[in-house]
Length: 629
Ligand code: ATP
Ligand code: MG
Image 1 (spheres, protein in one colour):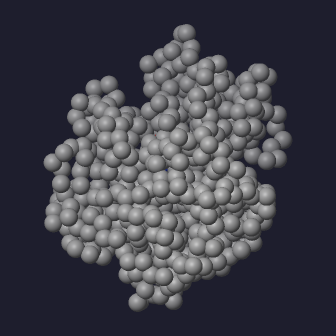
Image 2 (image 1 turned 90 degrees about the vertical axis):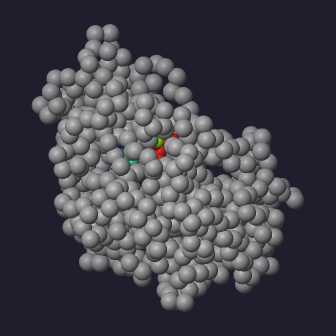
């Protein structure tokens, strides 16, 4: 079926469409009702049906593909590679589940998982899913404060942690962060289950509270744990948003809807059939990691490649080397990841045999055209920009090469996914805007399967955060967007970041993209700064590629000229600062909010999601020094 027909079916006859898609997974008992919208803006999919994510990811495949690789966990940090077949993974997950049960963890209990990107993180997630416990993975790069906030919100029965992670060859102890987080948090889980990787010989344990996974594993090895059949709308997991715009929200996912969305998207979007290999460079701590390192590929009977390490270590060819070695078909990464490689020599992209690589998917941040072109040319495969949020759980705007590939248009993630009824609307009036007009991207309810069911224990926050911006009940993405005549949508930035110059509304993306067309530019961030005359003016921070010989002032002047030429005088950056680093969240998203605060000398707010504190210092120094243009 062609995309147009498929999409139309999904929005015109949602119940028939999703009833058909539901056949892609195993139901212990079938749904009584496909869709219940009796309490908008909430909606329930596949009401009364019972199923289990772990059963769909593992048990279901054992007979046909027990010997096939399910998970390959490569660490260039420890030098260890683990290859697990479906049978191996089934055994590990059951053992982990048995350990959870032995610790009294049961259905509905929360388990916070604070692990590096290693196989045990996958075991722990699937083990929770198996027994109906609700996992909440906290990205291992977060410090103790972030962990404490999430512990207090999720109130877990158990915390699973590692002794340490590694980054760029350096051991990063986790356990002291766990101890500090539990000190800070008012909620105290009964136990901390420690996956001791032997990386931190100095690790200390709290007697009675801290338990060693290896010991418990040995006593539970080989035990099989029965699957807990859950009603489709019971919670499967919680995942907190990145916190780019403020206090993170505890996104709650269901069971049946999510399983169906994974089964549908892994084939029709990511073009992965059973037995094929998917490599997502995401950490399991992010939404992409949940959906396309764990649940999507495994529900789809595929092989998932998990990677702990930097994209540039031991050399910038490592990702492509892995693609060659495992015959990766679909790769998934982020624009930020590709920009890291773009600073390196392009010849790394040509060193390995990538004849089996079909697609590179990128999500998480706007994909600027120069980066899209660079990587498309370098790899010789189509690059599929796709737009989603932790909230949606799977791409909301994308192309669907597994169905039929529509033309790639650089700068746009493409067309709405099945079930997403999208509009671009005027922020002030709430009216739908015609093509080529900028506005807020909204989804008309009901949200399709896979999207959040609510904010954890806070239905009010679900309604006020997402559905209270307009008179009608519309889900606001809080992103600024524009559509072309063919329905291709481009994301222009977050609505919070829109710059209002003398009544003209500019998305940060537009100016960043224009600055990035300068051949010396590696990355750009633009913020709106208060101005007495114009309301706001754009201020640019840019990093340059390695080895640029031109003086910063010259580059900055040329950047400013480009913006004026391409976007007109209203977009002219008032100041341009050339810096060595830009402040980003741990998930690789630009923290424009903090940049703006620094420029305006206001409170930069919560900086705990900041990846590299030096980046802020770098910006402070640049501000003291004065602009390059
Ligand atoms: P918080 O909601 O807590 O502020 P966050 O929005 O950064 O955090 P995520 O859910 O990880 O948390 O990020 C989703 C956001 O990332 C989107 O709303 C959008 O702004 C941006 N984004 C994701 N994919 C794309 C893309 N392909 N193009 C442009 N922007 C994207
Ligand atoms: Mg968000």
